Amino acid sequence: MRRVGLALAAASLLALVVVAPASAVSPAFERPSASSTFGQEIVFQQAFDSPVPLARVEILLEFPASLGPHVVEVTGALAAGRHELLYRWSLVDDGHVAPNTAFRAKWRLVPADRTLEPLVGPQVTVTYADTRFAWRTLKGDIVRLHWYEGSDAFGRRALAIGEEAVRAAAEFLGVTETEPIDFFVYPDEESLYD
Image (cartoon, rainbow, N blue to C red):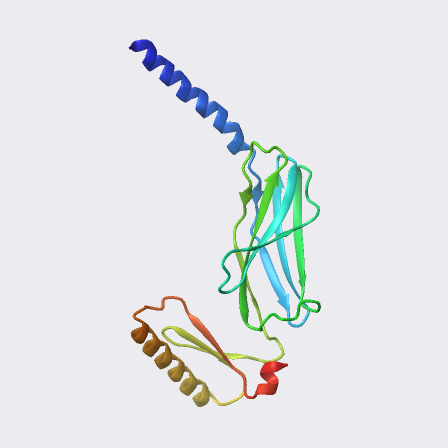
């Protein structure tokens, strides 16, 4: 019986020794960043240091109401060492992105050594802002109202309408909204569709 206990203890120690090197080779991510230029592009950046070569680098893009991330392979950064990743999403070619939409992204590193698990970095969020206008903002309990034309009284009235609409919808549907909801008020259809 004592031999069985010693064998189990030895096996446990061996498992710790085998697992330790795998965790020691994990890439170290720095804080990611993202920015957008209205009508042109959204840029995502991620710096990291990898002690092992990589087979593939991907960016995982999440859109509002998407079922899962859109995966894009990014070239470069395959050797071991420090790297700064950059992904430019051109909106000139892909212009169906609605302004004032928030996007989330994470970078995934797939080691060349297939015995190591892929590692996903920290998330970054960027709002593709309509920078053509000088937006003003008012915050309510759950609604953030953004407008650029009209008085402060107009903004307060629009915020009150938005807050009441969200409360009524939540009550009707039997749900509770916990995340802020952004409303962007354009003064006319032409400004919105441009």
